[in-house]
Structures are given as C-alpha cells and as structure tokens.
Length: 484
Image 1 (cartoon, rainbow, N blue to C red):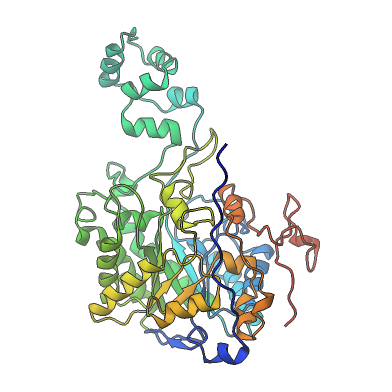
Image 2: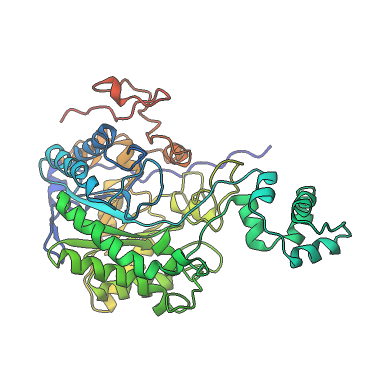
C-alpha cells in the first residue's frame, strides 16, 4: 500500500509588529487609473458561497457572508461571480434586471459599515453557457440521440443487426458495450453521453451561440450600470476558467466568424465587452478583468498567450488585471449520473485550487504567471496593476512578492475564508492569532456539491448570533467572532 504524499509546509509565519506592518508595501496605498484609492494591496477574490436565492437575489445569508469578510478590512473585496443574463444558474447572484439593484445596494451598505468604509467593493460579472447533467444511458439514447446513415454504417462494421426504424436502432445502441458505442457515436455525442451535454462558444450552428458577439457587450454594460447604481466601486469582468469569455480567449476557440482562431480574433469579443462597459460607466469608475495565465489543458492557452492578451487589455485601458490558472471543463473528471461536470476536478482544476498534497504545494504556486504578465505589460509601456494569487497566507511571502515586483496586489481566497480577520490581525501586529488555512479543499468539495461553502476549521463551532446562520446540514455558516 502506497504511503500518502507528505503535505507541503506552510511558509514561515513570521508575523510583523504593528509598526512593521504600517511601513510595509502590503498595507501601502495604491490609486487605480479610474481614480479609486485603495488603502492597501490586500485583496479577497471572488468566491461563490451558494447563499443567494434561486432567483439570484441577495439573502440574509449573503449579507452575513460578506459582512464577515469585510470585518477583516481587506483593501478590496470582490463579490462572487454574478450573472449578466437571465440564464438559469441556481443560487448565484444576478445583475440582468433592475430588480436586483435594491438587494445589492443593501449588500454594499453592509460591507461599508462592517469595514468602517475602508474596503473597496467590486462585483465580478460573468456569463456562462448551458451545461447539462450526465444522463442515464438509456435515457440519452432514447431522448437525445438522432440516428443517421453514418451511425448505421458504423454499427454494421461491428457485425451487428442494423434496424431500419429509429426506435429499434436506439434500443440496439443501448445494448452496446462502451468500446462499441465509441465506434458508433461521434466524439461530441460520446462526450454528451458520458459527461452531459455542454455548449461551446464554437457551436455557431446554434443561433444563440452565433449571436453572442452581439448579445454580450450590451448585457455586460447594462449589468455594470446596475452595479454602479447599487453603489459598487467597480466591476471585475470574468474572463477566466470554464466560462464564456474565457472560452473566447482560448486557443480552443476555432470560430470562423472573426471571433476565434487568431489571437486578434479570440480577444476581439472580450475587448468589445470591455469597451461597451467603459462607455456605459465612464472613465471614473473601476473596470478590471480576471483571466488565466495558463489554461493547463492540451491545446489551450499558456503563459505566452496570457502575456499577449494582457498587453492588449492593458492597451485598451483596464484598471487592473487579475491572474488565475486552470479550472477548465476540458479535463474534468466524469460526473456521476444525474450530476454536472465540474471544472475543478481534473489537472487544470488541481492547478486552480492546489492543495498541500500536490507536488510543490500551493504556496505562491501561481505567482510566476502574474509576474510574467506584469513584466510583459510593463515592457509594453503600461502601468496596469496586476493581482497575484495562489496559496498566499504569510506576511513575508506576500511582502516579498510586492518587493520583487511580481505583482502589485496580493489576493487570498481560502486563507480569507479560514480567517476573515487575518488582514486586520496582520495590521495590528497580532499575526500569531491568525487561523491558518490547511489547503485541504474542504471548501471546494462543498462548492462542487453546490452546498453552502464553509471552512472545516470553524464550521462546527457554535454560531455567533442566531439560528439563521446554520446550514440545512447543521454547519455554522459564519466564522467565529474575533475581538480586536
């Protein structure tokens, strides 16, 4: 029996005194191109807590989640991926209609109060295409499979009886082995059967996919206007991971309508989306983007692609660039029947959210991507700030990143979930009280099952206020209180 791999060790927790923290780059101010003044370089990136209503409205649980993060007074807090179109997506926030503005305004006011006005609040806006659950095998053949003469010819090569009538042909296919069905079905059909159907930006034979270049710029622009009306300090355009605009940027995008193929074609729609948003909200409001430094899939974008994309986005006038990695559908693990494919289960997913079990560990793992992007942007003559992330959890680690010019801001998601107060603890010279993330991805496992996200370090503690902060399965939804 193989012994488990040893866990990667945390960076040294040499915590600063309050005086050292006050002199640090980490807690030094930064003014964005839009004029937005950040009080530090600390950043909480978007996390999806699965607390919105099914219709996408802010709930008391959403307010409590962001209030708790804001108490730690990060310089920037990014609200979860929020949909710009009326696409069914479960308990995720939405911005496709004015009806969502009042709830989001309450969210903004909640964060302002909890952070004493110190935290700048962005909302990440996103579009995604349809992903269907993996069907039961017989259901797929009977409901979704459309037999053709090509399928019949392939079945004949297996020495099988080939029924002429479609219903009988489908029943014959249900009886095939996995090896045999791989001969009969086209690769895309085989994927739909084994993983669930998934739309791609290259499916231009579908009218609604072909129309995305006309639909998305005004949809993102309208969502940004609503975000400004609600009181947010800006938006982060979601150009990362497995979603629509990331797929346009990818080398896998082979659209032949001028929105795919070459780098210029692939970046065209993301640039048009940004231009539409900028026109709608003006130059005095923050608009940045998060995209991938490496897709970590065969045939996908690598760091050279990311650097070229970054330069074009900087040239267009983005206020910041935030770099992530991986998280693609292309190499995701096969889901169970009745479940949807999840883009953080394959190698690209492991690189997006690495644990201490992965070789080399998660600590600063993705910082070289941010550093390469920042260098390319600077060499092109642009000063666009770059946000670096990836296992950031120690003062010396983050201060070194900033001192070496590998990033202009440093983001920590899982560590901020483990201890929402940790930024404030560092500032006050009380770093020895930080609850350190163990990077086991307990939280990611909850996200995968679309359950309310918590942290294993505290979700069995008694709630700090009322029974409304208990999940249906008995977990506490809010991190324990900390006394300043």
